[in-house]
Amino acid sequence: EHHNAAMVFDPTEWNIPQGDFVKQDWNYSIYGCDGLEVDLPDDMPKPLGNMMRMHVYVDSDHAGDEITRRSRTGFVVFLNGAPIYWFSKRQTSCETSTFGSEFIAMKTACDYVKGLRYKLRMMGIAVPEPTYIYGDNQSVLANTGNPGSTMKKK
Image (cartoon, rainbow, N blue to C red; front, top):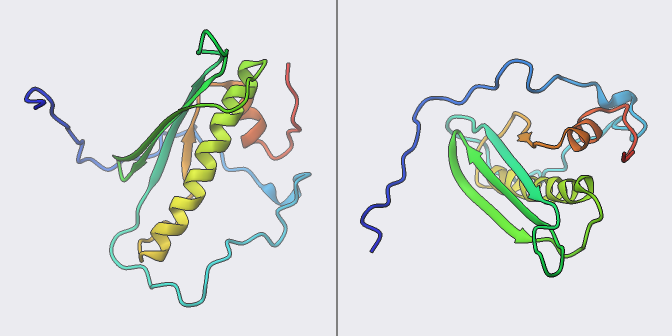
């Protein structure tokens, strides 16, 4: 039915661009990560094969719906460079700022990634690296990526 449609994948390995993600020490943050570990069951399968690298692009449009003024969340999840999941849905709350709608979009994407990482590990797929999440709102990125930051809006 869609005779003109084609999906093209880039077979090259995705590498993290230098400077995109600066390593932070969260041990001394106000949120406290001392002793924080991922709780995995003892009977989980042993990872086989190559490791998987995950990255996500997340965005929202503030008050995009002209009638209800609700924002829309959207994100795409890539596993080793191939898109495996996309999400686009109107947010349930009506945010008064771009920061609020972008923050909700980031939280939605993080919640999904947390569950996906657990599922992949339970299927015996190695995901040893952190998931790299890209966003376009500098305030949200600063508040979520910096351990010394406190939640402040402009």
